[in-house]
Image 1: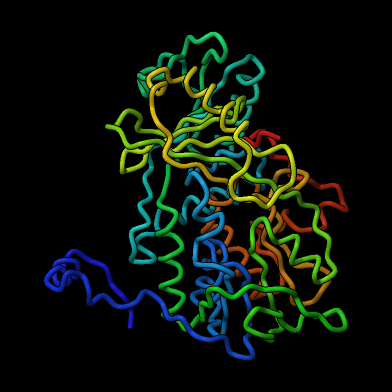
Image 2: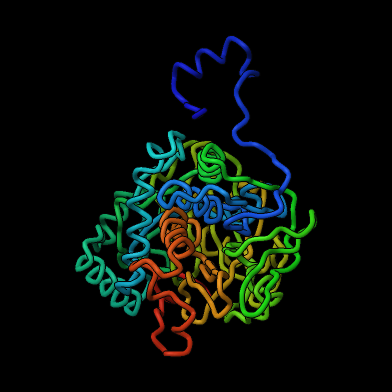
Length: 416
């Protein structure tokens, strides 16, 4: 039975102190065999299962998550959504995702709290100006809403910004009005609920130890709950994808590092857009609860810790106080790190591999959350059809052999 959310259901359940809501999804024990196994219960993995069921008619699917749904990178990011990437291949992928974001609440009948408050990328040097204007021009050619705005326009949009500071003078910025933020938990919950309704088994607290292969074909996975068989396995395990790939004899060109973020105490509304500074990798938005959500850079070494180094946070806070002096006396409530997997060209890998029936969706660096619906949609096509969707064809593993890279280090705003 489809679980519906409306003002009438909320009012009706209020009379029972909201104790009679249906569970959002089942917690089944794994079956012995599935048509498809998706490893990773974040937004990308759950979304893949949802689109496999909705668009390709596959329902005998298991999503296997070692912890709880959305407990990995889906819940450990700064929730920024934009599509203003430089190269055509990236722009098409992220714009596809942004269009899906715009209709996702209606599609899932579940409010993902997508707020199109706009995303601004600051220019601090002459080089920044040239690079950002080049990107704006490329975006315009691809039909993406992106424009150059002056320092005076920035000041009107963000009055608290110190645009004349000496360390990071603000000379202008790109601005994408359709960009914004969403609530990370709701994305995972919405996809999980609708996938479960179509028969997908969502198996939590079940760690995959090994991908099993035989004669060049995938035959299943070995988990903490035993061996589960399948002829198709999609790996969407963010920073741990390379570890699982090695268990199948595949070496992926990835580095895994903690990406830092932190949240302040709640305050009254002071900033109603997203502001990014590529030069210092410091970006900020304000949540609905009033907290400042601040993004920092990656640690300078490979690690699987979900906290990261305080030196990165310290450098980010220095830049924040320089750009926004009003933040100087604020207290930070919590800090965390998401494990990002970074490919050589800072673009994702959405691809099948030499082992028949084994597929990878990884290498998103700092761009994973914004790509969630688009990534899941094209990955589902790749798994179902055993061939790439036209949108993700450029992001195959073969590009690291052919040299046809999609170098997005600048537009990805990755400080490495």
